[in-house]
Length: 342
Image 1 (cartoon, rainbow, N blue to C red):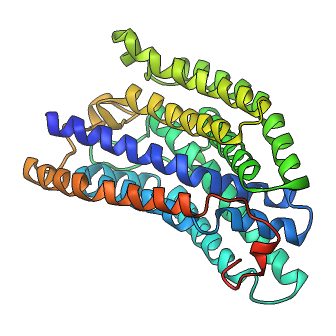
Image 2: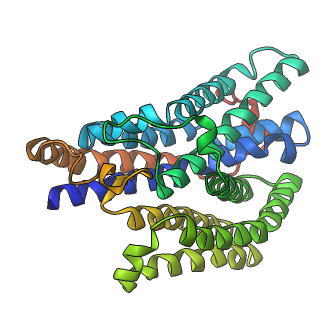
């Protein structure tokens, strides 16, 4: 049972790290038509995430791979129940990846507008649907004891699911605006700071509404009420959110971005902790729910995977730290002259 619990934590951690890293990419892509006022500014926005976005996607592959290897039953039921939403996310992410490379291949305003639209939709759709998917997991998915889903895509678009989608979108938009404030100069920097300041009170209100709605739409608070010390997670998340505003006011953009990252991790773990030991709860009958204990791989598989994770995850983290440090400078007009620039 200890192994299943460890893998439950790793599962939640990988999703949190993915949302923290790729969140600012999705946020910048969603802000592209509104913050970038001309082609030069849009190129700077794209190049601010250009060297990093594909590395950030590794965490999504890792989270999906861990679900498949450690909890294969969950993977099977999840990808059949959420098939439409997950396929939309996949197609959108493919579209976004292609737009990075294709945008600058033809010197035509219409061509660039086409791929800017693809970048926007390829960022906006996953940002919303990830929130919709996880909010629905928090409140339970209508599947039976055979793992058959009793619903459609529109079943997921319920009020609580949509609220989760709005929350995730706002988290990523704030995260992206703060990243732009780190990586840009001049008017684009000032505009990014203004957007971050404008989004913050909206994010605060939506987060509070989400926390209150969670009390009525889910059973997530049961674990917190049983172990009151866990409320520290919610407290840290709220403090981190307030830290964004404080550090933006102090003109400390990296600290503000780090506070945003901590807010995203906190929101993710708020749900993961509330779910435990459920990984994929059923709203039809609690007995149908898939947990870390009834849906895991064999102990031997979990042991082997744990060794692999201990050996290779530090390598991935080290690579990303090196990459972020290598491209830590601001993106300027001069950087756009290089052949490698988007």
